[in-house]
Image (cartoon, rainbow, N blue to C red; front, side, top):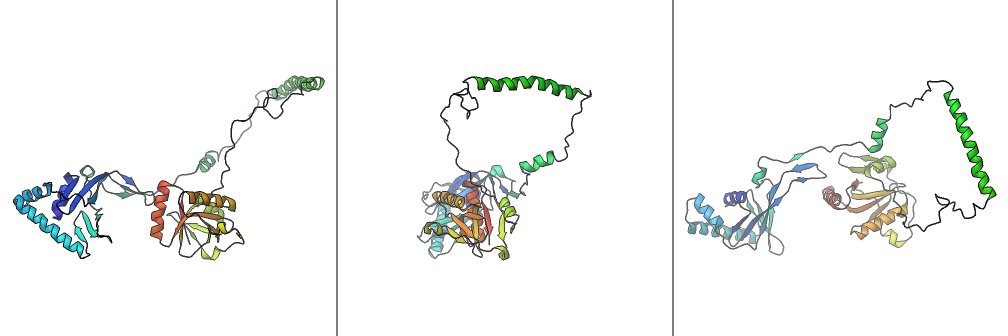
Length: 344
């Protein structure tokens, strides 16, 4: 039965096993993993629908044609397979369908399905496999500008005719001195300065009410690289995980008296992985950033103790590195592409 179901999935998007359920294929586009840097081709994603139990004749006709049986014999063969599958599932065992997936019962006695990702049923992707590429390290804007102007030397321009600069200065002084004198003498001898608005760029224009609103204060947020460079006590590993050395992680003397703030502040705990959204030297900025996290449904933890002047603000914390990496991938894909992992 395994080979018949697998063979039909290459040509059809739905293969129904009567009285059991249907295996449905959905198109899945090419994917790029943002953390592991893997590229996967387009494929058919196989799912299981237990409500599709009516016999459409597709599977029975395929078995009868390939094994040279009658339609009735093929139908009896399918019924025996379904009977054996139900018996194994009711005993709490898993039923493996080769190159398709695994069927099992959950706690509510519903059939669950785990697909086999080793087979790509999309014929248009035949011959295409997954591969991994190293992340591209790009230089920042400041580094490129520094490299561009590093070797340039400013050289003064020499006048080909000696004495020309002195003549130009004398002519400029002769023109500017009378103009300066007139601009000072006229206002002093007249009432021109009474209605002058000195705060405007145009002193003769009336004062207008500004139509803009000042922008909100930008928080001095630090990324993973800036955090490691500024703290001077950390190591940045290739997979963007910052590891805190135990000998340098000492509590600071900051005291937080407000009980509401204390619920957000935690100390570093050994063996814990924190997903960090940003780091702040000003504690009030860390509080505001943590409040914005809570509005989005995250924990908004502030690591006040253990990293000196810097206060990292975390989306959440985990005891397992694998769980932390999975959550980091979700946050980078949907909420914050600059989030990173802090391990202690």
